[in-house]
Length: 242
Length: 149
Image (tube, rainbow over all chains, first blue to last red; front, side, top):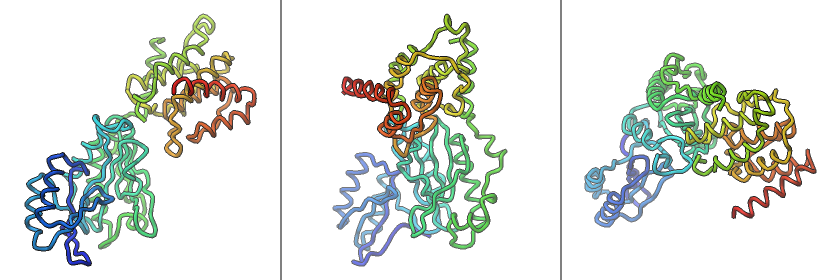
């Protein structure tokens, strides 16, 4: 594990740069453009996981590091660690379809968990509605908003490889705090149960789903009770004869 | 789809016209009335600013056997279809549009018509099962679509 720095065929370095869930401010964007020109960057590539790769000569790496940090960004991470969080533009200000402020939640998850060591790479995707633009079913830990501060969590997906795997439902109707607590629990289980360099989907397949099922008392603390919300509303409307 | 994209007020008005009113029914029990249930689902969506009515599609009151006015129901279904986003693979059963449509079709035909996220496929299915009303529904829907364009 380490920084997302890859030597290219040309000898240049490909350096991953991570913003908070892929969102750059104009200040950061113009700062990056300046850096790219100053550091003789040959090209910038947008990645599928919402990061940006700078192709730079090796001797410019330290300058890039300093410049990126000064802009409030980070050099990406790679290897057996929790990766940057892929999140949609679901916030109170942006996507019309979003059911919750997932951008905020994803940012908290990224700040807290990114770079944490795990047996193999661990990818997290967060989506603001069931349309799942960020492909939460293809992530190790996929989060889908179903209402205001109410989420379903899917576990064990993998998008790439010759054998992509769809994640399975792990928890329904939990709050953002629950999403974080459950992630903590899953990372602990994964670390405890996986063989070295074993991807989560393989660990689940080897030890069984039950080993990853969260204890009911943990989920209960964070259940939003949204599933009964409409029925309560209906009962109230019937009582009031509205 | 956000609640902002659905004109809940227009939908509610169309559903209201299907209500047999307390004068005809004697009492008003929303939980056991197809129209009352649809009205409540719409009110819920508006109040919570959401399109999802949790468990809404599971609790449609199927024992409501009253006979409603066909013309009003057809009119309301065409309004529902107009507001529907034809979500295709992203169709969700607990969407307020889906819940409302299910209530109305149950009231009109006494059964549900399968819906897989496509309005076109739905209209074809209605035409197959109920040719005369299917034709009328297509006409109403097209007229509404034209005037809203």
